[in-house]
Image (cartoon, rainbow, N blue to C red; front, side, top):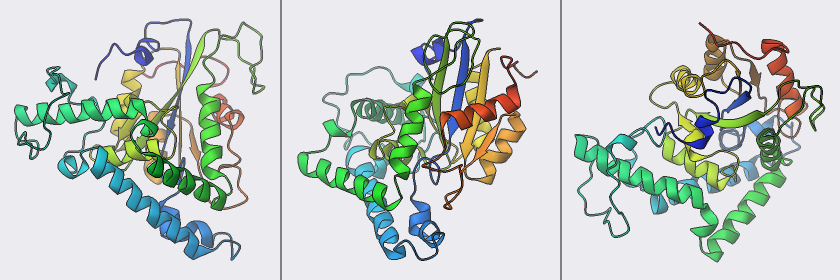
Length: 313
């Protein structure tokens, strides 16, 4: 991974900067998909939701995600070559101009040697470029309309879960501001440290390429850069959390994990980080709509108090 990127550089070697890292799960946290397919989301509403409609919406998303993966992100070729993050093989990329490179005729068939790793790194470079551009520059008008309609139907069916999750991410991303000592931020949280930053990171148990595509399709890519998307498919969430802690190392860094599963809960406990458990059932505050930056800051304060976090020994 390139240690010169601006996100990481801003997190290192700064004694007066406070950094809050929000580590998000994806499925049944920022998006709903599995609970639509297995009916648990709709059934929790005790007959108020059309269960079959939820299943149908989930099936359309599942097919659409796989189609986009295969058509635009090399997934048929690299499905069995998962890595924990997109730059994991960047040291094998020799920087070759790929504008006329034939990805269908280069003989790539899996990770057997350094040549294979270089060919996979080429694909990862193109995927990163497409992620940064966004799907609106890739899809034609018909596909964009299909995507917009599917998002809107899903958001309506889930009582604005998707748009509310995006809004919460925007609140977290909007924390990149200077506060003078004694001021109160827009969300009402008092903070005495100047020049602090908020960063959203995604750690998903799904494989990497479909997870990046989900970020794009569910409109999360403007709040979560591709460098900040991690797949725990092969290495587990605790190992991913350790990578993130090392990446954003420093005495003034605080972490908070938000997810719905036992694995991220146990990994957060092992790291001694606060954990916010998401519950898709209606009526709870730890769901969307409902979860806010104020709630997340409350969990930060429980673990870290008012003092800046001290790095664990």
